[in-house]
Length: 119
Image 1 (cartoon, rainbow, N blue to C red):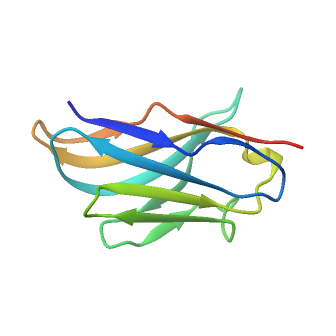
Image 2: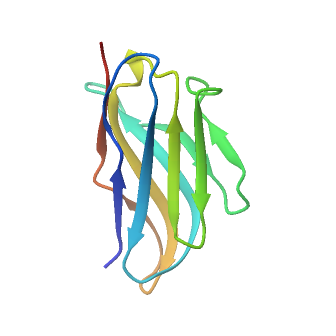
């Protein structure tokens, strides 16, 4: 069974940094596009950043210049380096993988990790 597991969330002061990680477990052959999403209380889930097979990143305007997405294809990992964090970055962050496993190709979500930016 394919599972995505995020780690690295926590409480940080404004201006601080955090790095999120997401790992895949199960019989996964390949990950195509990775994405990081977030959902704040009372708001819809939104795309924060994504990275293609070729490594091309895409960012929401609100995080450009502050967040960096990267991937490790050999280890089937994706990272989100977050810097200059703001209180409005507070949310549950989810990773998403468009991947091919033993059951075919599909989109999978992690369980989410809480990021709180507060003094």
